[in-house]
Image 1 (tube, rainbow, N blue to C red):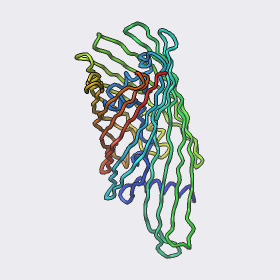
Image 2: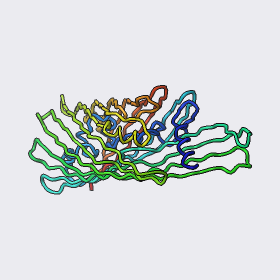
Image 3: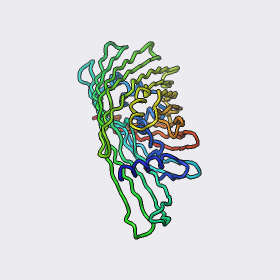
Length: 380
């Protein structure tokens, strides 16, 4: 009976029209494997992801580590505020995440080694639904709450080798690990009935590898690309049988151009073949996933002088498709972004701040969000 109730509540929660979101994170991550993570630095986020393949801190292109000049450690915090409209109901949600931590060191004149951990999939959401059931011939008001907390993290060990002053190669291994805790409760309005609660925990594991390259075509023009592949993401749950979902083949490429010294324009295009997981998801009772694309374009002005202060200014726009549909509707998002950065402690500490404003849509379901990015980099 408990397993049946869990299934019924999940279907009802995802149905949309009669539900009210009351989540800590995006309620649109309720289907498939959740919302794809964005493990990038605050500097890159402020440009709409335009510099993602050149980001030494991000988990996208291992060759980008080659840009480090010494020992560095970094961390990123992301507070977010969202407004969700599902059917005729609306809710305001808030959350704070830490999607990226890392450390890198110059091992030799040509070799740079780095370790990072970041978001890969997020499945933190909550849905509250009121209903009336008939017990012993009497209508009884109930409130059903489904809440999922957790996701999948990506732990990366990477190395970059400076093949020449113009070309850097990189390679990395990825270990995916995480869990979600799904709690389902039913509260009865009359005190004569005992409230019901059930908990299901799902653990995830997986492996992957990535390679990348950075190349300076000219002194003011650089290009970069990365390729990533994985095995199957294994999910074992206390509420059901184990499942295995194919991980996508991921490609990304970008270019960076400096029309004048101190001004950088960039763009990145990325592809993820989540269509490979469609059969596995259907076998697990989920809708078919799809292959997805993302695009980011932005500007980084390094030499904006405000009196005695030099304050880099960043602007950008991003758009991406998301692989897991909501009630048969494709899910996508877009955002505009901006930010700035400054250094302290004689250049040993950098602080980067970014803000983005955007929306996710799936049919009539819409979520607008304002997200802040705060990154700190320390160079001992």
